[in-house]
Length: 470
Image (cartoon, rainbow, N blue to C red):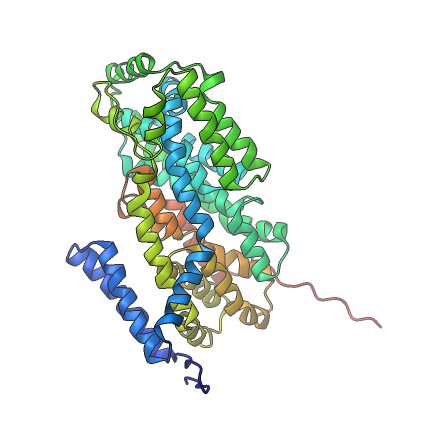
């Protein structure tokens, strides 16, 4: 039942919240898949719809705007990274960093093992740096180039990259989401990571085997060595490819990330170093290099795919993605601030009794939170707050709560086109979310394995009870 307080907006009830959220899903799904309407337009329609619901509860325009502004303010660090990663990619293109990795990668990597090895390398980098975005924006771009040269479908390559990057984003002790989930659930960081090992390890091993099997099927096809050689020759003609120099921006990025230097500072320093290498080692025109930070342009090697890849990056390349993310975050600000999502989830939680059902509901709730709010951080905090009493009632450790929330929020945020992560991955890798999502095996298999294990009572940590003192 909605609660009214004099001079204050009412709290939405479960039925109104369900109707509000259901229409959002129908508008986005129907408009995008059925009618082919732009996501930005659909987000605007959803903003109007949710705004009207908030108005019906007693929220005025200024209050609704404050809810949107508050959500955008909380998301500013992600917005800064959106802008900086575009410049990172463009500067790494001009410095020869990406070209060097592609050149040597084509020499060392075999198509049969490319997907499996790429998964491991992306996972290692994301664990070491604690950032899936940094991994996708650096190694991810490189692997897209190598995969294209090996004639491996790009959606498959993008799915592999997202799997590896998400592994570190979930498991690294220096990852924002890992620390946030542990803190929000009230558990120790390393207890949280220990709990995740039960479900994440078998999922990652299964994902590795799947990519290994798929890769072996591509290894059986004839690799066009002439095309590979042509790409390498084109790169040598365009760049100086001394790894000790061209890889310095990437090394600096990795070292500063490991030392927990703020991402904005880390990326800015890498950009400056890459620009200096482009100007003084590659001999690039300073004006062209600086303009590329805003909008990079295709090169002229004579190989169309390579030219397009080397022309990636720049702030403008992230504008479509950034605008979509801003609208989605503003929508989430109203849904969360006006209490629609809380009312919806609280009504569902009260009906859950079995442990396996509780974990499944937590995971689904994290996914719905991502859909509604456009990014995982608020979804993690909200779901930890909502589900904590229920986990205590079921006598489960807080680490199981934090694990389940991550498996719903962290794991699925990159599979939704309008979340900050999904939009970022699509813009950076050049593949639509809906195209690579079927190949992001790790991201959705983790939920299936977690729920199955819970049904059999495997990997459930319960608080230790102190023995009674005689």
